[in-house]
Image (cartoon, rainbow, N blue to C red; front, side, top):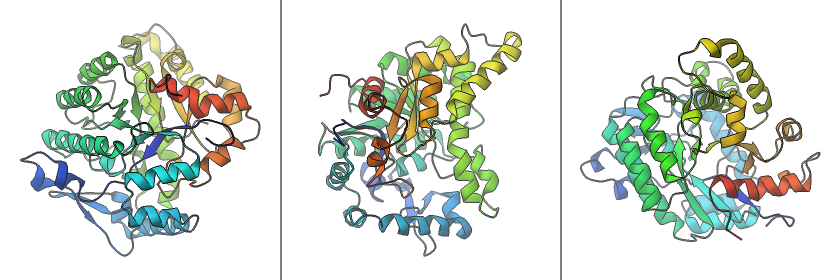
Length: 386
């Protein structure tokens, strides 16, 4: 609770231990367990990740951008002593719940950090990508057993391997209790999320009755990632970070709505996470306008405007300190917005994220209550939680 509000975080993060994959990978994949390489210029929480001959983490491989992350890491640790405690404990589940208590979070839906990062390369062999996802889901399930009433999780699947992603989504939801499937907004091998090859996955997730949470990552290792444009430019990390997540989520929503996925799957719920929400009213208008001009001649037809699919099936996450939220609510209402704090990432606001949110000006207490709990509970099918 925070100032009398119940709080459900739509997108908390784990900071997984280096040895996760050595412990949880199936044979014969253990020999390819990711290695985490740390250098003096890097933040300790932003290593270079090595899987076989692949090296991931474009931001952390380049000194110019690595030092930016290290500086942010140092400033975040200076904000509150719990960062040092959590880091010393390897960000274990006990320290995670302690952080939730400090922040005022009652229930957190966990999305991985390194679990997402290890999948962010086009050249991963599909069976290897699926094995990495399975291992991460097994570990996260075990992590949540520390306090299953407060720790819930969204399941990794590898978009490199659609049949493998379907099998893992079913296993993670039915056997491990995952509340959602994590969707990758970027194309992999030039295959967009509205590509016909992806259709069986959307069939399966719709049948499972869980949402897909689209969440960009910060590694910029996929070939088709807008932040790669700025890797070797002055202040490229600032420019890339400011635009990357919102733009990737815009394109993902465009694929799901204007690409016809939500038309064909009316029971599929989607969340667009960690990309702010201020872009949404403008982009709904822009996408509707584009559809009215170019849609009638397009190959795939939809029966509604793209914006209507958002209101019917989608949610967007606001940052806790997002001052434009008041304008977003004025434009689209407060039924489809959730909140996330991004703990324990250095660019989050811990320990004052929820404090910042409850003191946002121009947002009513009624809207705050819906965004802090009710909407997130609807998104993740947790409306029965008290």
